[in-house]
Amino acid sequence: MAVQEHFEGFDAEPEERSRSAQKREAQEIRKLAEKIADLGDLSFKQLNFPDDLIKESLMVARSLKINSDERRRQLQYVAKLLRNEDLDDLRSQINSLGATPKADLNALKLENLRENMILGGIKVINEFCSLIQDTDRNKLRNLVKKAQEELKEERVDRPAARTLFKLLKAEVKRSGVELPSSLCAKKEDN
Image (cartoon, one colour):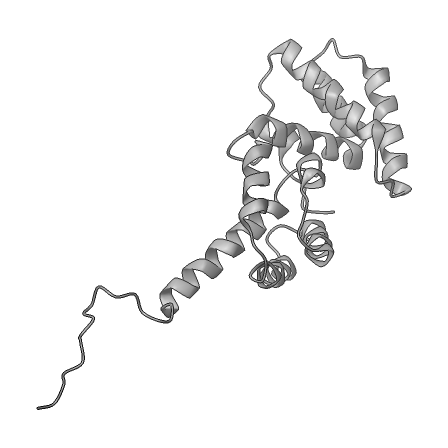
């Protein structure tokens, strides 16, 4: 009599993951890469990456125009690098930051306003001062000028930019004014 092998049935886990599961995981990693690339400067600098190549690749992606093919391809490359890493630590760091666009929209708006002010100069300063009229224009202008010099020197620490962020945050909080999207939209002409 022939011995019949035991049938595991359909409840047993397959030995390989399905292609759909692999695609879902790849999309999830790609979304994580986009989320990191869209973080503000302060939040991005707080992250500890598992590999320096990942950080450098993300910095390149952050410098590219938002909806460009170059940025899309760069983020695909970053996602490819991230697939080989344990992402639990990186995800927990991002969740603890609280400065993602959905979690802390005001911090992202203020970071974009600061960068627009540094890149746009007097035009953006005037627009901000017309919104909050009792702002110390000279102090604001001096901080923007120092932050522009830091940007030209490619300084990593950028203390004037941090001080400018704190001033903008304090002024917006004090006045209670809602910042218009024209001031806070991330400019794509970097």
